[in-house]
Length: 220
Image: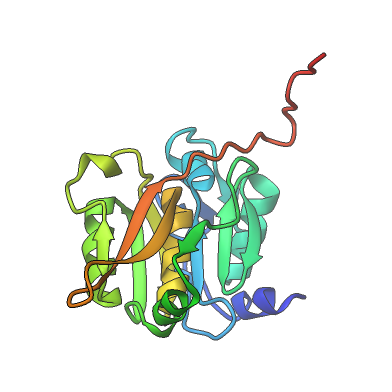
């Protein structure tokens, strides 16, 4: 058993849950995450949330009378198109169409270390939240400017965010947000010598990942 699996095996799901489905699947798994040092966050990526909300075909029975988070992950993997990948310290629930590597570009190493030294909210729990809900929280807790601003049309193509986390640092929070919202971000310091501010720009992630059962057409 991998360390992340062992950690999830100690986290019970709510009593009485016998199935993960459209109405309770994402929320049950997000609220089931407990504070620990191995799996600090769980992210439902766009492909996984689409299986529940868009295609409406994700449904997984829980046969253990006292199911754990690990039981939930195993059930989703065996009974749906959703897969699990541990991108330390985040557990990613995704499909084959999701890009699993976050794109975060920093102007320099000093900015990277500053963001890593920062902290996010102690317990993050966001289920199907849009950019207008996430942006102010990032801005306040990281102490930097976050663009696009709240209510900006530039965020209209961002996916809604479903992730949970405990004691994430600033960098880990950026990874969770970009992976959940299918975005990329870049970190820059702007302004003159007397007034320099850190700005984090988010943009739509335009990478396309073909499912494993769909190959590109042959070219000649």
